[in-house]
View 1 (cartoon, helix red, strand yellow):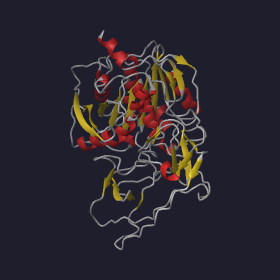
View 2 (view 1 turned 90 degrees about the horizontal axis):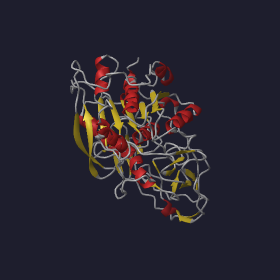
View 3 (view 1 turned 135 degrees about the vertical axis):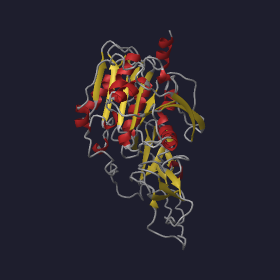
View 4 (view 1 turned 90 degrees about the vertical axis):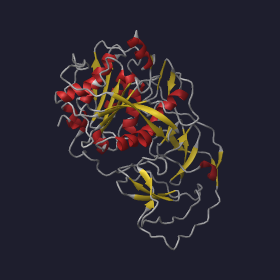
Length: 473
């Protein structure tokens, strides 16, 4: 009975019907340029919201955050605004201070890659990058985030003239927004994703004893930790599992392991999942690297948006917002608290059911941060579709469910599901089919006879952990 209850808390019944794609439209309206506002990577936009970006106006077709206007494609969330925009009154051009030293700091740009030590100006302040980053807005990444304010030193920001938002008649010539051209990520030249995944020897069922404890192996334990989230403006909990022989003098890769809908940070610790046992047993056998495992609570609604749990988009939005809590708050907390090996080659995200859907969303939205992505029985909603709970708008369109820059393709993308899954049905296979059509290297594993259960979870987790962090090289 206990295991049955756990399985319900980690998944939600989704009936199946063919996927559908839709684009919402709104009648043209008058929008003052000063009301449209400049697009911000940290702001949440809903259907009908209008922003300005690089001399153009864009209208959101559905909920979005951190999607750059002009990069989401013909059927993407941002479409050219067809309404009327009234001119804004030009703001006076400020005069640079005589103490300004030019050339030392540049204005932050959402499409520019910044590395450790890079300095930018944004919103009247000077910021320094703590590590590699792209499209993370200074001032939004929290106390331990990638951008830290420079409050003293020799760098003085250059004063940039303020400009009015251009009206259509004033707009610069139409330009396509280029895809980011980031510097080559660490490990990208040494590990080719397809070649690496070809080395995997996947299993269709978790081997006997792999998810159990034995007397000859030392196991870590889950320790409940709390951190403050600037994303939710609240203190949040997570479980951290350290290797049994953890030493601060050694650097460890990190797996962020995400639970299903209606669950919490304790859900993946259930009996039979092997969350603690599988990594330890594999490491003892030399088939996995020692690693830190973090099990967070992935329901992370923005302040004032929490709703009663239910099978509806308003509730799903709280899960979709976890990407911001993870990258801006939890990951910095883990780096600050533990001895962590940094870089995408040392960072993984995986999950079960809604956690699998969220892992795919995070991994394919932030490939510069995550080199390994695993989805075990992932829930509907990665791409548009309809099931028992209603229409899922899709976190990606089918054509955009891919890594735009091949240099950032995950070293491993693994999707796993039971053949008798009565909860998510064939949605996981549809993701496999879409990635195949989009020429995205990945591994697809079916677990014969498994339902939305611990056997599907442990099999997916076993395959994932035994291939993570370059252990096959």
